[in-house]
Image (cartoon, rainbow, N blue to C red; front, top):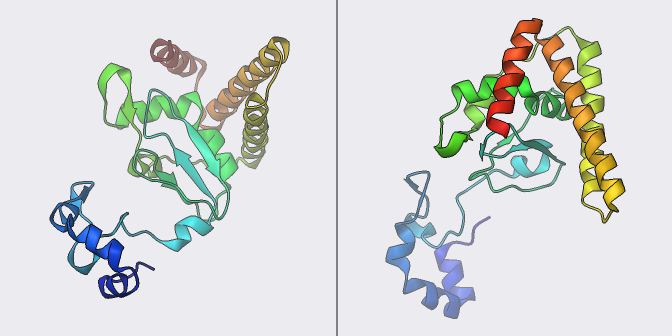
Length: 209
C-alpha cells in the first residue's frame, strides 16, 4: 500500500523535503493521457495496480511488432504493462492460448484489426487480443498445440545458453519445424482451406522479411 503524505513527512523528512521541491511537476505526470499522481498521492511512482495481476498466470504481449509475439509469465510475477500488455485467462490453458496467438493465422488476423504503425508494425493491444474467437470441441488439436507451445518454450530456454554453431543451428531448425507444425494445427483448428492457408503464409512472409 502506498505510504500517505503525512507518514512520508513524519518518517522520512529529508525525502519529503526533496520531493516537495518538484511537487508541481510530479502532479502533472500522465499515464495513457490521464493524471495518476493527484491529491495527497502526488509523489506516487507508478499508477495503481491490482495485486491479483501479480499472483496469477498471464500472457505478455509485445505491444509493437510486425508479428504476434506472446510469452508466458508464471504466477507471482509482475509486468510493466505500458508497451507489453498482459492477458490473464480465467479457465483457459495459457500455454495453449500462447501457441495460438503466436501462430501465423492469428498474426494475419491481428494485423487486419490492430492499429498500423510505421514500417509495417502494428500496435497489438489487449482489447483486440480479447476479441479472438477460440474454437471449442477440438481437444485433440488444442492438446497438440499446447504440447508444441511447451516445447517451443523449452527451445527458447536452450537458445539462451552458450552453444556451439552446430548446436545453435540444430535448435533453430527444431524451432522452425515446431512453429510450422503449430501453424498447420491452427489452420486446421479454424478450418482454413488450402487456398486461404497460402494467402496467410504469403502475407506473413511479405512483412517478415
